[in-house]
Length: 474
Ligand SMILES: Cc1cc2nc3c(=O)[nH]c(=O)nc-3n(C[C@H](O)[C@H](O)[C@H](O)COP(=O)(O)OP(=O)(O)OC[C@H]3O[C@@H](n4cnc5c(N)ncnc54)[C@H](O)[C@@H]3O)c2cc1C
Image 1 (cartoon, rainbow, N blue to C red):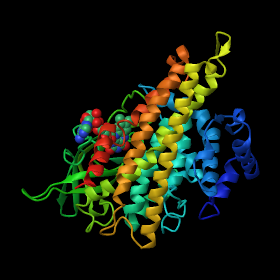
Image 2: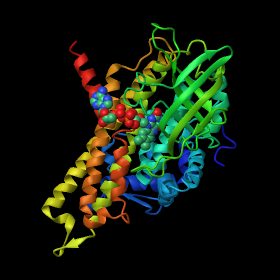
Image 3: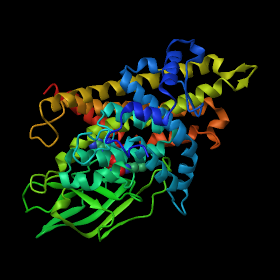
Image 4: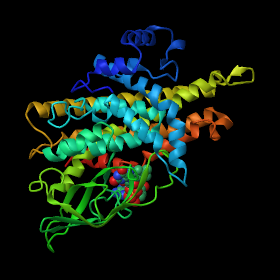
């Protein structure tokens, strides 16, 4: 066990326990940066991952880079060898078993990855790493490289559920749930979407909560909920019953899976991300005590819209690691392949039009990554500034600077577009092999496509960014 004797895990112990010794990693970084172009790749865990990730362009600090290397090493050692079985188990329409996914969740807990952004000083969470959104993004990218499905499940757990609970939950709620969510005992999920409420998630929401004497009664359905089939606790948004003519309000609840009246539908059979569990949630006269309102039942009752909106920017930012990781995997697969495959007596990668394809893929991967990392740094900077002023999400008047909303949306929008393009180009580079499932190219495309709708659609992201740009001229 990683953390039996220490309340908080340091990055160097994380690194030393789970990966190659630090000196070796520094040597590798040196070789990556300064040797000839032909050997400019990084290997992890004895070559389980060989990546043409260009670490010279990232602008990461030494500490961030150390963390990055540790999570890539974990991804190579633990995730990569299990990625096929995670896909198979989740995609099996008879069993939809997620045994291996759950096992790897527990190994991620041992690494501390479920609490990357949970404060170390939190009274309930000596397991939190207390790191930045940049770190969380790096973890999401590294896991997505080896298994996009696992990473989606990880993002829903560690960002959508854990981060919202950590930011908004009451002392009692955090004490009850955070330790188990961080140590791998529990899996978390977040439920806002419904069959009739996707892009217009608040306006069309039909899951309704009625105040009764000692609590609330919840009725309705949520759809497409990541981790739904396996989660132990759900952050759930619901429409309040209000007096005719009164302003519509919403409330956020924490709903344990064991609550009477709660059930889930059959796991959904998906185009990509087949290893990631997704299903419908059903609430039939679910009684919830007042203490189930996320945060303070008095001040945060009816404040669900604010809580929901406050999480969306961070969700977009952290989940941007998904397309980044998939795109890097697609690029690496393509580069490797075109330098092995020979036609007309030459490696196909050296043919002019294929060389141009490599140039485009290279540029897309690196522009997307450097932009996303820059947005993460800006978010972290403003978060730190707010904290210095003693401000947090629960404070009246606390908002992220508005430019971050457009930039978080732009980060995931751009990374998603480029990931889909690079996955398509990877398929083309592999010729016939790109089209058969013995090779991973088609899966990259199917997995990347999720990010065009999950965590909001590309069209809504464009609409949001455009609206913010236009508002500068009002
Ligand atoms: C695998 C998977 C996992 C998911 N996980 C979760 C989860 O964990 N929790 C959760 O709450 N939700 C989850 N979702 C739901 C996801 O957030 C929604 O699918 C998404 O918000 C889009 O909603 P919709 O599917 O209803 O599309 P719709 O809103 O019906 O959109 C249909 C089309 O119309 C376009 N459109 C709609 N409104 C506009 C507009 N104003 N301007 C321009 N175009 C517009 C859309 O871009 C889209 O192309 C998941 C979805 C998937 C597929």
